[in-house]
Length: 481
Image (cartoon, rainbow, N blue to C red):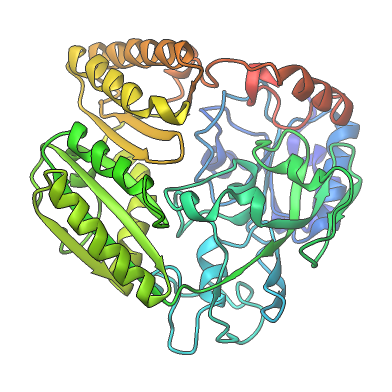
């Protein structure tokens, strides 16, 4: 077998020797579900990524793309892994046009730095600025414009994830209720196709697409159709006022009834999150209200003009009281931002605490959300498992996680069986369950992508046409695509 150092010599000439790593102590840090790559490369721009992909085609090498690593636990273990292409050096904001509410960024820019770049003169930002110190001179390409805008995406790991990873995994959070999905913010892309060609779609103007909007193909593609290099995003002005309303309930029935009443009105909250006491208790948040470990907590994000926020707060507190609520608390501005950042980092917190943590994303018809959560509670309780529930009320999405130690074989086996039971129930009501993260040695016993839909035929044809050699993230996506 040819020595890898010699094999990747051509890449060293293209990227620079310092940006091609084959040493085992380094490649071991970039494993994907315990599969170690032969090399890790750090391209600086789109042209260099194109050269890397062309090299991989010539040498028949399998590629997995990585940003900051927050999403690498998603998907199946790779069938083959030769190169990890890390976008950490592609961290430039190429164009920030606050007048037209658009910005163009490279894939390796962290979401937190995008929001910090758009902060106002008074340092009013969509994320807590105390946590948003710039990490290098290249992160923010020009002086802060005090523009008072934000990119309306609410992803998990909001302070660590890169924009490329967020788009590639279609990563969303509770505030998708008001702001929709990442795909709704994308108005243009540049991507390196699996054959190494550089392709572009869309542009800076919001209404610039006729026919099929192919830029959306990259959303949720898990790196199987190419490598996203640059994205043009739509922005919004910062809300005039931001508040969080927290209300405790003795049980899920009361909490869900409260959420139901909100959606019967014309009020427009940014998020209505219903979580059990276990999930609320694990939030990494200073001065967190003590609502007890049992019961449920409703967290409502209010982001609008000041009169609208005031009206929503008053009316929702009255509705909560009528629904049998217990204690409540209100977070304003910086505390509001800190709370939702803690929500976005809940999975990271639990990953550190529980080595066998298994997280699943459930989707279902909106009318079935109460049944889904009740079924999950029943299944997990019967298995005597500790669990968290985090339901995006009004979205048809719920996240649940099993808090187990990977060394506890009995608990792990119960957790796997419980997830499979819950998947079966989701399928009965025309929903699905997708495993978001799990220990690598447990994944073979789980249906990572759940039920395969009728659209799989189209997905497979796209993959076969765009990546006939199967070099892009082989095996990680649905049915091993």
